[in-house]
Length: 250
Length: 303
Image 1 (cartoon, rainbow over the protein chains, first blue to last red):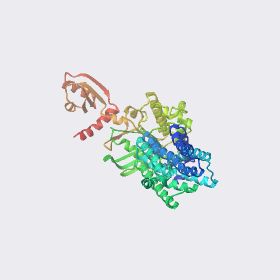
Image 2 (image 1 turned 135 degrees about the vertical axis):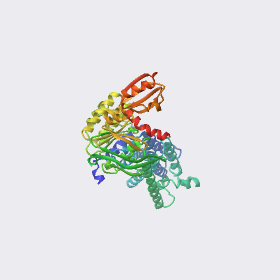
Image 3 (image 1 turned 60 degrees about the vertical axis):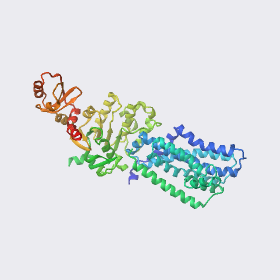
């Protein structure tokens, strides 16, 4: 009943406004969109070995996940913490806007920024000679976009609990830490054992392995295990996010 | 029973502890349609917490909070509520028009945007980004957000803080008009002149309870009518024994006396201290009335 009585288009307008806000914040947009593409270009195209398409495709799998973690962690983690400190969440909370519309709008913006970053990376990969069947591209893109979800939930829980400064620091640490340990930059099998062991606790590792499976690169472990791990981390992230929203009165 | 029909929001027997401290203590409070209710009291009295409970940001530990008969934490209950919070910020990269349009869209029957902007006195700023506003302008945007949905209850937390007197008076005029049209208004303010000018009813809070609930005129009358200030060697305890004196205390170098009948008090006061100087007599203000109301409670806390 509540949902039916809602004025038409609340969720859509909230999401469009949030995307518009993200586009008006170049200091947020440029680093999160350009960093993954810059790194991908550097390691795949600019470094000495010939841009072997197989290598470029396997690397693309990992960097696409990396591209999704930035907007999710910074938009939700740092962004939500800043908005909480500025009293913006207070403004939303006393309005009739359903809490879900706020979260959905932030997620839409994070996915939209991820899509921008992916366009750049995918274009670079084509330059590097990567040729994949259309269905593979579609599946890979879908996985890359979905990668934003667990990180967005983790970030949201952080944003509701931490100060803006703290959240930025933690978002940075997770952005880089998860990507290195999860094997998104250097494939996990080339990492020292201890790094692999820690990496197994990051969503990046499991998402990266699934992405490598899609492009036909070598993987570690069973895809079902990775899917189950991601599902479990997403559920845990949702609980962390929900309790964060409930606990914080300001 | 007539009260119940007009009630739009209510706290019943509400207790709330925050940070290990009892902020509200079995508080009962009713907000009625067509009335401007001012919620006054010293810092820490529980005003902010009461507003947070009524607007769904906090849940009571005991008792119930109701907004239009529903739990205020349900968005459906807040669809008839407009809020102007002191602590709330504005998204800096959106323009005023974009922000007001977004907020108006949360309500089932919003006011036209241009009407909202005109009522809040920000029509000429509509395309300005919220990050580029002065404190007073930002408050007017907050006010626009509160009224954009034709809410049946307006909660205004320190509405005119950071506003110049002219803007404040304009805002009072529109608030008065909305209340006359049948809206309920809950106002908190440190500016007692504002409460006196605007409120039909004043609730005075102290230590988590309502200590007075009356019209501003009745409260002023209760305070005794006149305030006397003078330089004297009399101590407050002695002055308090003089006829018609309600309250006496030092105010800087002055002795401040609240009197029910200034003439009677002055006659005996001059006899009690022939060397008395600098005698001034003024009508009791709402501030005096509230100071008198709160005095016994403060003494109890000090004791």
